[in-house]
Image (cartoon, rainbow, N blue to C red; front, side, top):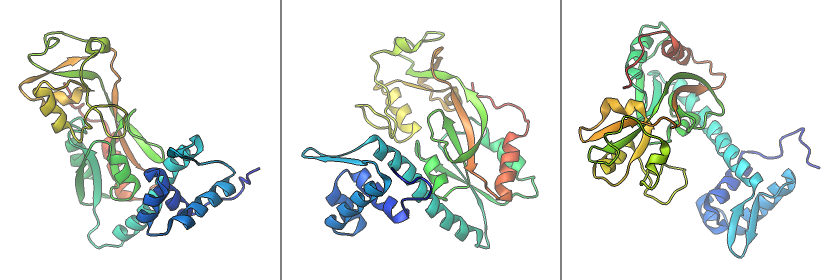
Length: 286
């Protein structure tokens, strides 16, 4: 029986396991870590013994993760990010020119950020703010590893575990189509209407199509008639002239969520949260 009363692993154990789990190849993982393969293999077996569970299945077809291994990979990445974040935040706190870093994907604020920043700058606890624009799905990682102080995430798609959060707005789903598309004159759609259409594949999601890096790439391919996409209704604000957005009645709504590290003691973060959650004129998303 595994003793659950005390930690069975340390950060070095996790670092080695994450390398193997991401590479699914002991030789490549050993090269990435700068160590020989035999001691890496022994370290993973010792880790499995201490945890009392099998993390990897090794056979002639290669290496794959067990369910327990999937959990340790997911949690281990967050643990390593937390160690990195602690060091980064300590360094930033000790610099004379301290700044609040807000991370979001392009056009990922539903038109809210301008008003939030204006309110934040009036707070006595505010410090100068920088806005970091990242690729699709990168916001949570940048917040976890300490490169950002607050993030605008999107539910239910982004992983918000380990963060304190406030939902800012919920957006309906729309289908973005070329104006010449067979469905472009419809007042509304159901998801079934889009069966057979090529859809974008987002980072970390399954699918056979080309992986999309950002919304501009998606819009270009839709305009060329190469795909359609179901997106939050906030895309209407920056929609290209040759595209239309049709409500999808049974589409998954998207929530814009403000996230920051759990138990944060930053007065600037608290000021930003106050600014974001104070009543103000609703943003126009349609």
